[in-house]
Length: 209
Image 1: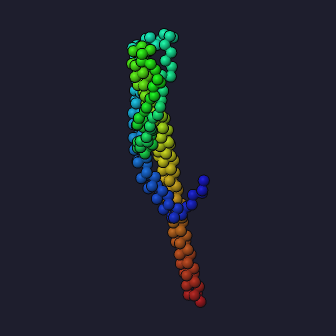
Image 2 (image 1 turned 90 degrees about the vertical axis):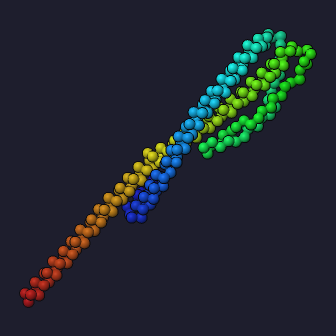
Image 3 (image 1 turned 180 degrees about the horizontal axis):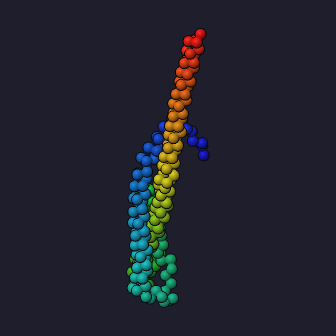
């Protein structure tokens, strides 16, 4: 850490830095509060998405209890074909946003399979989409949580370190300059007094002659 210079120029620099820190701190704190609100929303969205996944899986089990029968082997019936994720800017933070999802359905004979398989296909597609939405919601929450942690560190840096340090430095420089100015005044007075005494001594010496 550079040694603090005790000069008028250093005082001006510290005062300008203090003004900059005090000007930036409110906007940083506002962003922190905005991101904190977004984290709360993201938590709620993630919880909602997870609950929807659980609800769909429960619904499938209730509507289609025959799936428990090992006679029906329907694994791989529905799988992801493609999905599109765009980027969303939230309070300066880039977040993923699920635009669309496309599920592919394996070929199956509607004549040789029970009619409820059509219902199963739709439910599996719904569940797959909801799981993807839950995954994206979880990623959004992770990114926002990290952003709040970083902005909080910056707010604390300004509020607890940079601003107090700048104030302390300004005070130290002012005290030093004040002491130096007083010392200079005293030195000047002493020099004038000495000169006056010397003139008086010279005048007395001349008068004695």
